[in-house]
Length: 293
Ligand SMILES: Nc1ncnc2c1ncn2[C@@H]1O[C@H](COP(=O)(O)OP(=O)(O)O)[C@@H](O)[C@H]1O
Ligand SMILES: [Mg+2]
Image 1: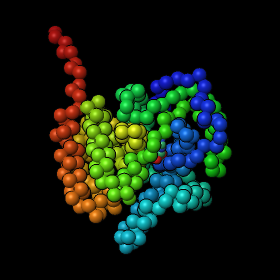
Image 2: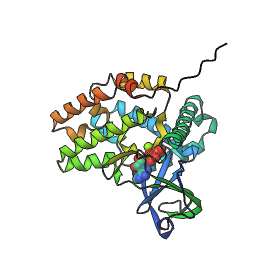
Image 3: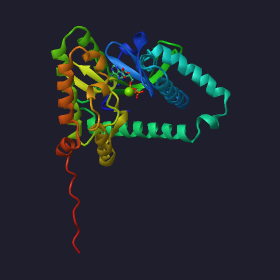
Image 4: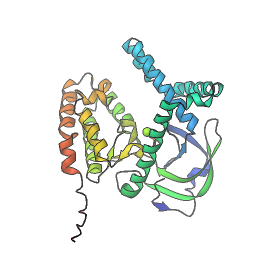
């Protein structure tokens, strides 16, 4: 956890009523009161069930006609949840060795490693900066949450953002407010670059992992953060080959009737998200003193 401010007790609104399930990813489920969110880490079997499920869905997607396949992979989270519970039940019927077989185990270890590394980097470099939501820590307290779980014990909470960047962009596109949509995309680019100038890069930079606070974009999910230059350059080399960054970011459906904005964004993105800009911004490592004999 990224602990920045220590409170004598949990914010009162966390224990006043039942917290609403707000969002989820592969590793966490997020519950919210008015101004704060708390996170439940999923168990390893839940994470493995989701990894297997996504692999199956993606394979099935490739076999189906494009539209149907896309719909399947964009399933609303309630349906994914049902599939995940079924998958976990199936996992119980087969020997553990099968599910934790070499490949899946590798994916799980990779996930676990990069999420721990990301949290450490966020704690060391981003705590207290405007790049991430504020985090508070307090003595453990039991909170009531919606869903089957009932209660959850937590000792930290995160500032609740207004919406995810994904939701904000969807709303703006729906209302035809394309000028603002472009502005938010520009703010995303600025946030990413201010991360780079601190020696951090997110390998998991999709729109649901960013949030909106007033006029700022913040990083919600430190999970993919890395400071390893060789991994980053390999990733950027791949991204430089992507012909339409807006499609890759999932913006195609919002910009389908505004091709000129899509083209402008692609050009802007390509000019900013590349190895040469990264090298300009990346901090120069502190010189190691050379010892003379
Ligand atoms: N501070 C926050 N305010 C509002 N929603 C949040 C916040 N943090 C996370 N969320 C929501 O919860 C989802 C999952 O959180 P995330 O940290 O990305 O988990 P995971 O590591 O499992 O991907 C996010 O995509 C977002 O929708
Ligand atoms: Mg996430």
